[in-house]
Each structure stands twice: as structure tokens, then as C-alpha cells.
Image 1: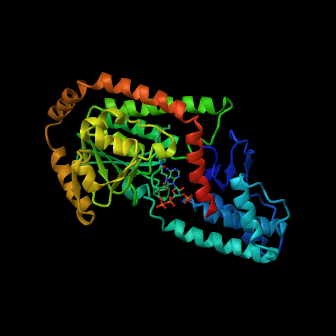
Image 2: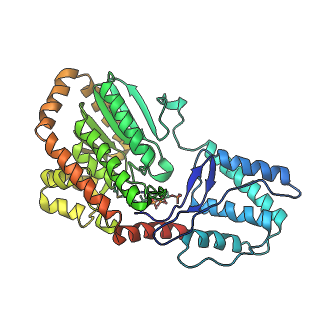
Length: 395
Ligand SMILES: CCCCC/C=C/CC(=O)SCCNC(=O)CCNC(=O)[C@H](O)C(C)(C)COP(=O)(O)OP(=O)(O)OC[C@H]1O[C@@H](n2cnc3c(N)ncnc32)[C@H](O)[C@@H]1OP(=O)(O)O
């Protein structure tokens, strides 16, 4: 299970936090409070409030700078003992503050104000899709859902995090699939906003440890995973993946349950499960050997071989590859034509094809989820996730 919480927007404010973990990292949260005094106090206080309203997560590096400048502005030079080597988050914060040396409080305040002002302008021109601009369907924070030409498009919308899938996102996707199964569309399409299709499971998913501890977290996650994959197994309409960029982890394995997979030639397909101390999910332990043969499936699922779009096509995981420059145009022209085919015939055909295997797929999904529940508690998995975050924390 993941150990260290790196970033998050809590109650509207960005914070760096560490969570209680099996390694006993102490619970900690940094809150930006209004205690600053000094010449440009008003500007500083206003900047502190503006940080809470940023639409886009500024990333760890900037959050560390904000933290350090805030501490310097309010408390002066770093005055606390250096945290231990394995207290990664607190050490990163301490390093950032300490690096400011004897910077005067007034200068720190001004630098903080300048930094926030820069962040606000870049946040305003963010590539995050604006709800109004894309007729976003209400009720979804992490997805943009549109319906046009009898096609419902579900777009993963966390481009700054490479569309990593949070627990909220899994839940929203399940709701979106449920709604799409009942709407007027003939085809449902998945895609990603930004340069990635999806970087797979968000590795911070396991940082909010409930009172029942990591065992309870693992159990709840396994239930969520099983329910999530079940929605794909049972989805009644043709399901199409428009893979606009690299895909990792569960965003790859679940493709075995799609009816068409169109990929840009920029896309790659990577399932680094062993590297993460994890095992396959999304029914890929069954669909991948069936699609590409056992040897090629093993290369991906056990040895983590990353495939190019061309390789994924050659192995049958991808239906067709398009040059990135014409990808969107060609794919959507194709899909619009398909969406005009008789709806009932398409849906019945999908049922005939899927029904042969539905029961088997549900059993495999349950088994994969059960095994992962155990894996998430393993040292191998914990160490791999911690490794990812410690690499990020070095900045
Ligand atoms: C309910 C539970 C179900 C569980 C189901 C299990 C599924 C298994 C899997 O999906 S395993 C796959 C997990 N994914 C990964 O291991 C990918 C991890 N990410 C990376 O390796 C890299 O981020 C990258 C190769 C995807 C992109 O690298 P790049 O250098 O181009 O970009 P950054 O690393 O700087 O990423 C930008 C910010 O996005 C954050 N981020 C990206 N992916 C994830 C992720 N999977 N989880 C959490 N955060 C992610 C990254 O930390 C950067 O954030 P920052 O700007 O705040 O630093």
C-alpha cells in the first residue's frame, strides 16, 4: 500500500502532507494561515488566499517554494531540527525552507506574492478543459462528458497529473458508464485530455488511511477495483478507446474489454506491474494471452515491456494506429460514420459477442482483485510506491 501523501488540494488549499504509514511517518499537514505581518501584509494575505483558489495543482516543486517562502515570511530563517532521512516529505520541506538562509521576511513576502501572481496567470490560461467550452455534463469533477452525433465521449480530465486515476475518478467513470448505457448514444468513447491517455492508478490513492488501517484500505480498494472493472464487462454498447498518448497500468489492461482501440502513433502501452510489486487487473490475465498469445502477454504483464502503438497493433491490442497529426480528425470521422449504423443491431451484436464470456470475465476480475488486495499490503508494493514518491520529492 502506498505510504506517503505528496500533494493534494484539501478544503481548497494546497498542502504537502505525510500520512501515518507502516513506517510510522507521523501525520502532518501544512496549512497556510493568516499570520503574516509586515510592510506588504495586505498583498501577502491576499496571495495566501489566492493560492487556495488556484484551479490547477502547481506541482510539488512550486508547492515547496510556496511553503518555504511562507515560513520565511512568517517565522524568519529556518529554526527547526532537520528531519530524519526517511521522513521524506518533512525533509523536502525543511530543505526548501533552509535553502532560503537569512532572506529577510519582507523579501520572502514579496517573493511569495510574485510567485502566486505568476501561478494565477498560468492557471487562467491552463490547458484544463473549461466546462462551458466543452458543454461539460454537470456532476463530474474529473471527467468531461459530451454527447454529440450519437456518440457519448468520456474524457479523463486531469492533464497536469497525466490523467492518473484517483478513487473519485474510478467512481465518476462508473457513474458515467451507467449514464451512457442508458442515454441516446449508439457508441461510447473514452479518451484523455492533454498529452497522456492515462498514467494508470493514481499512486496517492492509498495515502488516506482509514481508522481500520491499511488492511481496510486494501479491502475497500479491491472492492472498488472489482466494481469498476465489472462496469466495463457489463457495458452494453460498443466501447471505443481513443488513445491520444501514453497509457499505463489499468488504463492499458482495461483495453482488453473495449470493442475498438484507436491509437495515435504517439501512444505507448506500459504495464509495469512487477516493478510496482503488483499483479495484472482489468481481466488482462485472461484477455491479453487471448489477444496476443501467452508469450507476448507475459512480456507485458510480468516483465513490463512497454509497447509502441505499432507493436500494440501488431499484437492485436490496438485496432488501428493513426499519425498523431491527423489522429483526431481521422478517428472522429470514422466514429461519426459508425455511430449512424442501426443502434439495436450494434447493441445486440455486442451482447452476443460478450455473453459467451461474461461469467468467466466476472470470475477472473474477482480473483485478480482479491490477489491485488494482498499485493497492496506487500513490502514489494510499498517500497515501489515509496520509491516513486521519493524520486518526486527530490525535485
Ligand atoms: C481502486 C484502486 C484500483 C487500483 C488499480 C491498480 C492499477 C495498477 C496500475 O495502474 S499500475 C500503474 C501506476 N502508474 C504508474 O506507475 C505511473 C507513475 N507515473 C510515472 O511513472 C510518471 O509520472 C509518468 C511516466 C506517467 C510521466 O512522467 P513525466 O516525467 O512525463 O511526468 P511527471 O512524472 O512529472 O508527472 C506529472 C505529474 O503527474 C503526477 N503523476 C503522474 N502519474 C501519476 C500516478 N500514476 N500517480 C500519482 N501521480 C502521478 C506526477 O507525480 C507529477 O505530479 P507533480 O507535478 O505534482 O510532481
